[in-house]
Image 1 (tube, rainbow, N blue to C red):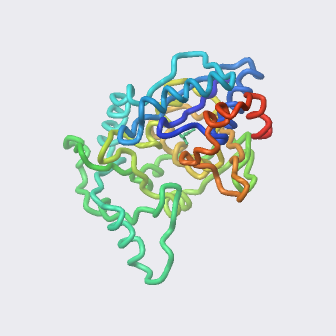
Image 2: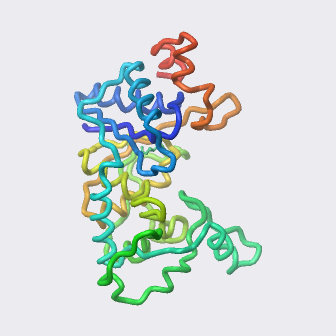
Image 3: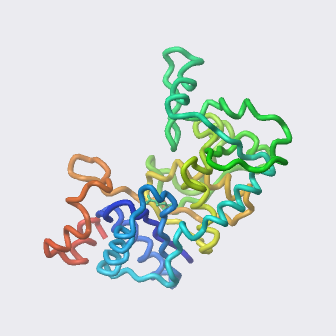
Length: 288
Ligand code: GLU
């Protein structure tokens, strides 16, 4: 078993992160497996060195150690570029120039009054730029400085069933073999962004490439990412990557039932530490 914790250095780790990291770490140790760390810092506009340093400090304080040097996404740009080149040549991605406002306008235009579909990344892309493509475009150089979207319908053409093994549970208690239909993928998820205008890659692209690079067999992460997992399975198919098992875990909420967020400094691990709490206190607070 090889698992990982993959925080973004964009704010302090809070109780929700502590739960995720401790759970993955405990599972790896109980199985005699390997626990790894990955710093998800591709978004250089938000990542900060001091948050990365704080992540190492907080995890060490919690008693978490990792078995290999951390993988930093900012060191992996050439791997993301190579994957994008391959997808471009196969015409599985296309450039998109739409702003959020363009998407909102186009998504609500066809059915006046009908609510546009919201997928794991927000509004499902209505396909405006996909319709502008001339066949054979994959033979031209891949453009830079623009967003690139997955052509979901085309990606699904040659694929078998989209399924993954859930050893934890989704938000509705989904467990076991989770199958997502082609219709669900095209209609409720759609053409997700695989490379951003302002940086190379996107969460979906980098997470599958990095899980493969780190040889991850079990992805342990929050239920908020359950709905994104079918996207990752599609990408593993078209990029010829192995399929790990998934263990989505419950989210840690505040007393009003809201998910904790990065700006929730009151529940930052570092705050609890300066208040004199101990690592076992943190474990107890998250129910471990
Ligand atoms: N970097 C993501 C986060 O901080 C986690 C991604 C994952 O575990 O797949 O929410």
